[in-house]
Length: 282
Ligand SMILES: Nc1ncnc2c1ncn2[C@@H]1O[C@H](COP(=O)(O)OP(=O)(O)OP(=O)(O)O)[C@@H](O)[C@H]1O
Ligand SMILES: O=P(O)(O)OC[C@H]1O[C@H](OP(=O)(O)OP(=O)(O)O)[C@H](O)[C@@H]1O
View 1 (cartoon, helix red, strand yellow):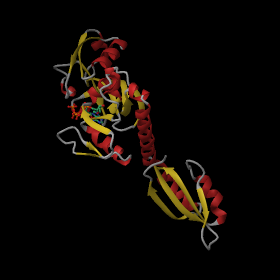
View 2: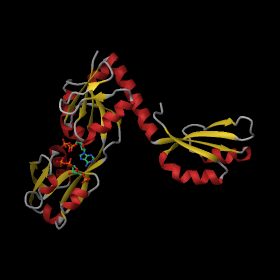
View 3: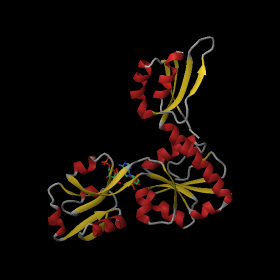
View 4: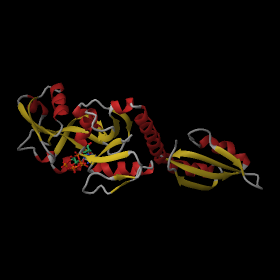
């Protein structure tokens, strides 16, 4: 049994390849062949553009893959989403020149430019625009004002829209990288088993990345107060210190809470606080 895996080339590749590496599937030599060798026997890897991945999975050409949610929806392909990795978050927005007036745009036939034809058509029809659609192939923001009245494109920091003097008039969709499967691969018990194992490990790594392990010591009379402060996944681990009256407390904490929590733990009587990264939470 060979599991056929497709990964987008471009910006998504590095993060996905790092994630797979942490799940034991290390990829090497992708640069120009677009066919990296996989360290895990039975997994064959190929790189394609994000746009082509959902349709090729639906055609049973590949078993599993990764793609931006924007392209999964745009291609309207029959694939099963297994996990939202949360990587590369973007908003797909409709934007017009800073000086444009929406009522004026709605009073005439406009030119709308985008790489996303279906998403744009659906959005503009819903919003009541009369438009002619032109497909772009990158650099969409440079079309207005001469070559477009309105664009639909993705935005992350907003820098490209700003540099081209465009303002957002609506959000079409929020997108991030998804782990997707060909439904026929999931019907094959052998393939399904490997996919489910991979999924479990990926969830473990993603979960682990959002948490750190905090370990600390405290005297017996401060134990209750400290345990009450800890938003642990389950109950924190508490163990008695050797030859001393105090306790050691250990808990997995959301990374975002650490800065706020550490001073409170110290005030509550914690000492010797150690913070360590977590590789996986399974
Ligand atoms: N600035 C960005 N930040 C985060 N994600 C982005 C950004 N631009 C595009 N993406 C996402 O990356 C995926 C692929 O987008 P796109 O087709 O533009 O390829 P790319 O990564 O820019 O590669 P290439 O350089 O080959 O065009 C899409 O799902 C898109 O939402
Ligand atoms: O909001 P920002 O942080 O500025 O990011 C958004 C820009 O990034 C992407 O472009 P990319 O660099 O991939 O070039 P492309 O338009 O040729 O795909 C995207 O198409 C936007 O143009």
